[in-house]
Image (tube, rainbow, N blue to C red; front, side):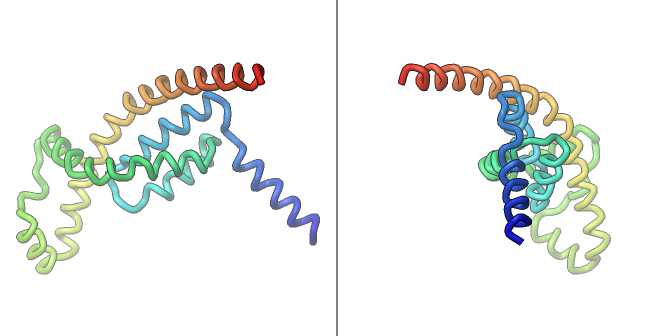
Amino acid sequence: MKALWKKLWNRLVEFLKQGISNEKLALTCALGVVVGIFPIWGITTFLCFAVAAIFKVNIVMLQLVHYFVYPLQLILILPFIKVGTFLFGVNPLPYTLSELMTQFKIDFWGELKQVGFAISLGVGVWAVVSVPLGLSIYFISHRLFVKWRKTHQRELKSQ
């Protein structure tokens, strides 16, 4: 039994240590921001776990970056949807908030389809924005991690 716990512990430690090179840390920062601003509230934590498994990045740092940009997600949901409606020339939600609540009471499933369409327009804009944003964050954070490691290694060698 003790061997099983030790094996599980070693796997957990190995999982937490993965992705600590400069490249992986920069990728983790970029993916954390891109996934963190995804315009569907409530699913980004699960997306982070999937992204961590696919790209083999550090899950702890990915979640940390994701939580750090959480306020941006809330701020950007409506602008993503509004830009999507402008770019695609449709207005799936031509109501005020009170009218929208009344519509939901009258035809919940029909309104849910319209809201889902509006959110999908926001996801489309997010997909367009996320590529240059992710690349920019990757290259900037990679450069910062390289400089930090060089400085940190010099300090350790001098001690």
